[in-house]
Image (cartoon, rainbow, N blue to C red; front, side, top):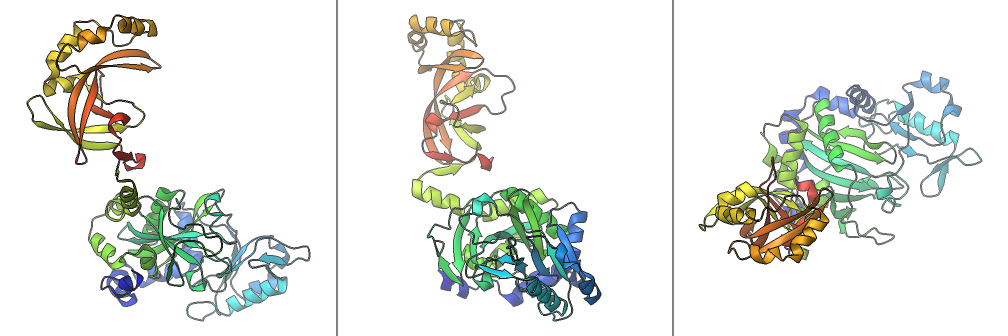
Length: 466
């Protein structure tokens, strides 16, 4: 599968990415902006988007010699402003008694080491163009509990590819021992594809090789639910819009206390995300090219409709059950044998299916309703009144009518009810259901039919699908 994808004509290459999707959608000034991490942070902050707090920055040798190195906290992240591929970054996790900072892989860094790294950054050793650069210290984020088992030392991040205001592809990047606690794929980190619709991980790669479990503790990498997923998608689209990029990669980490934080934007994001998702980025880009996307929510909706569903398809394949949202279009056969279309709510909290009285009349059950009403049964009953109806076996009299097939006794905080049930032939998502539905008179009922769990045995309900 991996070799097929790499040879596919739809796999997006670097030249096509640059010429067809980046150049037409971003000016040189905008690309230069996101290449400058500090300028990008300032712009994002101006638009009230969450970024890591800066502790200090050193822009030149004059500031370097005047800097109070003893002011550095126990934990921080040191970065080059125009760094490439994670090079030059130092992450510290605390301080030892001897004053050294704790690094991943049981290593430490002395003050001399930190000063030397800053000096190298200023010399441009880690910048994209090998020109003098700025070094800055920022707060170290704390790992979210959802990732504790999967991450070695560092904090994982999510990269979302945005094109034309649509999140077209996403991946989770996990720090490993090989990557020295950095979420960097080129240094041995793990890349895990994410289903855009659900925020659940799918396939994983390490060093361009498909893997199913973490190398050390052998726990599955598929099926991890990313916290704050919708918020992450929204932040990604907003960040790309603020920076004026038609095509970009937005990197977001999830802090244990603060939630999603934008780390940086990349005007030329890498292409290995395609392998982790086992999907063509080019194909997805072409599908949203030229669409008129005016809002963040519209972009996310388009993404979920076009690119979601891998996990859903897998669940359907395993269980044999279709996954449905809460609101669905259905067909109901009336007394004349004609199919009537309407919207229905799927409610697993309701034991049985119910139907609005007025809609029941439209289906041809008016005569049965009139017969039921001759019994003068109140809509809301006390328990004693309900027990009295049962003891008098009123249900036997009701079921003498050919269209009343049963009686439903229901209880709620408002009281009890004694409802007639009528036979319905329902078609839901291509599946035929023979239902006994209780008839209820409820004013301002938004959906004329509520399908209860008795009739939902062939389905799985996902409340996030609407």
